[in-house]
Image (cartoon, rainbow, N blue to C red; front, side, top):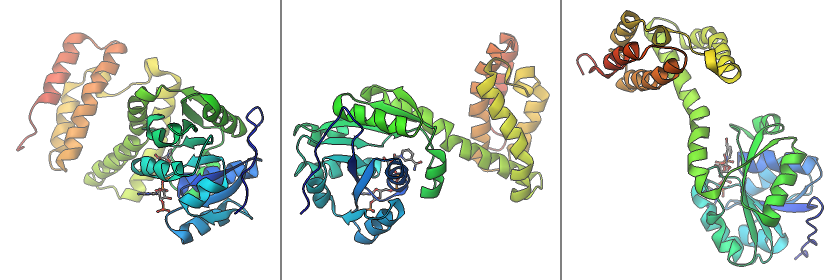
Length: 301
Ligand SMILES: NC(=O)c1ccc[n+]([C@@H]2O[C@H](COP(=O)([O-])OP(=O)(O)OC[C@H]3O[C@@H](n4cnc5c(N)ncnc54)[C@H](OP(=O)(O)O)[C@@H]3O)[C@@H](O)[C@H]2O)c1
């Protein structure tokens, strides 16, 4: 078995291993390997997936099992599903001592690495605040993204080195606030996807094909996102901001024949939209009328 490398944390770590063979493991692994932090090996439960991930990351990367990885390297990036991090940490902890470990989960803080940190390893979280649907997309999107770091010590230093290598932005999040932070990330990413899906379905009810609807909505979605991020104080337009009750009434009638999840989505986002509109000058009496309308039971429901 090959010997472990010498640790030198004043300098960027020269090499590390990856636990996990999925999208984040492959994209982050390849980016770091190409930028000088050599990936020695990738581990997975499945040898052929580990082999595929190793080939994706670069030449000379070994495909190992988790126990082999723990005895091969001193620095490990864990990029497995959120629910399996603790189990993988427990396996790695059987062999790893005084090592340095990062995980890439948005929901967990350092507590999930307890099996490792209890044995003298340094552990931290490094979460890319980005959506990575494929390894190839990760290669494109991760550089320049924001990464949150939870934890301290050697592992947090390594996390900072990685963010710098990727020319990213750093956000420090306390471990006990990770669930709240992650809820925000899910709203900004997953819920935007769901909202667009719902808008396309509603367009379908107006007789527009999904492909056509997506193309037609794209400039509107783009401008709305741009406004919300760049001029939030005047980003909101539309019937709630204007207090147009008849328009809202007609919307609710139009949505009545669609799945109830869409009607509920319209109403609950409307409730928050009232708060945004109040900040933009909607009178509180009008806000009350809009709220009353949105709380009215769905027709026939
Ligand atoms: N994708 C994103 O947009 C994104 C963004 C930011 C952060 N993250 C975080 O990055 C981590 C990895 O996400 P991903 O999207 O790369 O996941 P993924 O592509 O679905 O890959 C998941 C990996 O987890 C491993 N795994 C699943 N169940 C396991 C178990 N019970 N025991 C051991 N290993 C198990 C799989 O290993 P096998 O090969 O053995 O099946 C696979 O390698 C997660 O913590 C996620 O929250 C993801």
